[in-house]
Image 1 (cartoon, rainbow, N blue to C red):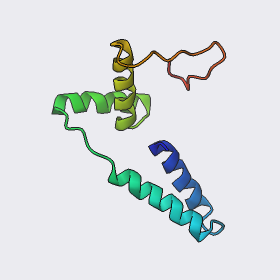
Image 2: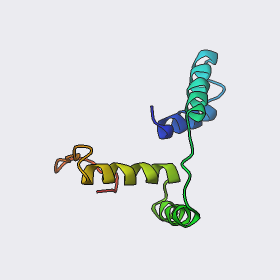
Image 3: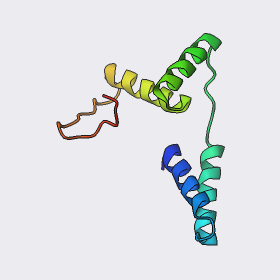
Image 4: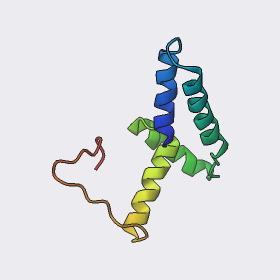
Length: 96
């Protein structure tokens, strides 16, 4: 489960807090806690971090999401991962 989907699940639970069961809330909170516990920062040079923060703000995404995109594309470009293929009718969510 990705950070984005956990965040969406938490927001949804907050919107319907009166209707959500205690067990479902416990599951959501434990997933969020696990995700937070497993987050490790990546030390970056200040200039690199500033550049990445500017790009992330321009793209309206989080810094970690931008780093994931850049890393994925670098790994594909350098043949460490297979290149993802998109069909003509596939969604790219605004990113190609």
